[in-house]
Length: 363
Image (cartoon, rainbow, N blue to C red):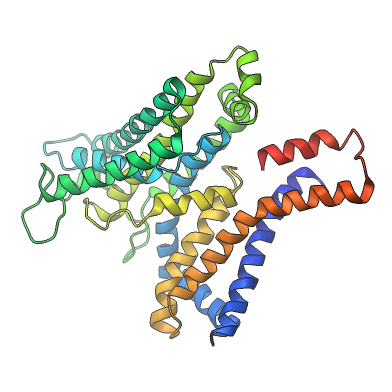
């Protein structure tokens, strides 16, 4: 089987197995699998409004997952995208709430750029610590993620973004800083075009540029990167900045397109869900589209299941958990398949060995 076809088949098999396992759990707990899947379908894509709600969730999930995927491609475990997302949202709120007369489109552009820069600069911190002090990025990104969230809470509870009132929230951004709504009575904004454009840019960056090749090489073989004359520390920082920029863009789009102000319940844990989205997509920018849409559909369909089909919303999270488990077990399937082939045919032909070795490293 062609390598590209195998790469596409494995995530699909992961999802199918996850659905089968969750369907069995539903049957055992008194909720027929057919009823669960039907309610999930109707709640996520069954109507224009529900489909739009799914796309609203898709936007921040896909953008944040893009940043995580690029970091993973560089061999960096950026699990602090939640914090970079928050920093992008904070910067977008700050710039968006500025008064004064802005030329048409300039205020919105300033909000988006502020979010990108804030996310990128915040991700630069763990990148520098990793590159020049050897600090593990799992620890630093996680700690900085909590710091960003608490910083955001401080700004709207006691800081300069506080709006007087019982509910901690910031002032609303100006109308000139908002994205236009595409579907009336929904929150689906033109941010969907920014998300798809970002995916296109990320795919071009990783497959058509020297920088993308170097990032991938760094993730697969840091020694080869150094032998090729590329500065691994510099590339580490650049990779983290790019990753943070995409996550920051997600926060900016969420502020300008959906919430229009910073609130305690703003994040909805998109940064952590995006980790699984990137893994299911196998860190492929194009794979982010179906992967993010799947998890967005699970999240948007959960409420419909509970309100309209008398099925607990937790069933959607059971499905999500089963898929997450299969994503984790996916590496075990790769290992078992390689061992199976070695056991069946003995020593593999030289023509097959490099491809399988590469697959073990990159998948």
